[in-house]
Each structure stands twice: as C-alpha cells, then as structure tokens.
Length: 157
Picture (tube, rainbow, N blue to C red):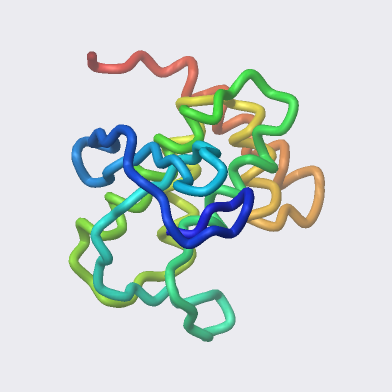
C-alpha cells in the first residue's frame, strides 16, 4: 500500500477490525519509511450494478454520488457523517438485496428519500427538491404538506 504522505510503497498493518456489520475491514497502517499512519478500508468486490438513468443511459452504480448528494442536502444541518455513511450503506444494501444487475435511478432516489426523511426533514426537502426537480412552488408545497401529514400520522411501533 502506497503511503499518502511520502509515496513509499510499503506499510504495515497496525490494527484491523470489521465495520459495517462485518462487510468491511478497517485497517490502520503505518508507513515503513516515514511512520505516517493512515486508514484503509477493504470491502468485497460485488458484481457490477448498472443504474438506468432517466434518459435511458446506463452507468455503473457509484455510492460516492449518493454520498455527495446527501452531504450536499445535509449541509449546515445537525447530521453527522456517521449518520450519512450509515444511510448510504443502507441504500446500497437495499439495492444489492434486490439481486438485480440493473436498477433505475428513480428507485435509488426513493430509497434515499425514504431513509433521509427519518434522519433530517430539511435535508429530505433539499434532496427531494433536486431529485424531483420541483418546477414551481405548488409542487414544493405539496411535498411539504405530505411531509407534515407523515409526521401527524401515528406509527405502529
């Protein structure tokens, strides 16, 4: 593993532990040359998953795009990076659990919004405004009303 500090091509593992319910191994490494410590994550390479976009094009599933979108929508909100990462993990798990090789971007967006609504309502509205491409205030107001109605409805817990 190449050191991000000095670019030396040798490091030793200092600590290793499972994360993300055992699906990822987190390794603390130390450069053999400059003793700089850094963290790497090792995950099983899953079969390629293609996302079918609204315009019909296909691209490989990229969890980083989801992560960036959620970070943008949760900017200046009391949402921790841990919560955001957990949400992205849940979305990816839901998508992969379908067992399909292709999935629509709309379904991914619905998964994100369903989970994000429980984390932070403002981040949810921000994400929905971009994802659903609100054309005018009436569509935005409709989404807000649905959110408020959802809060009023008692849950069966």
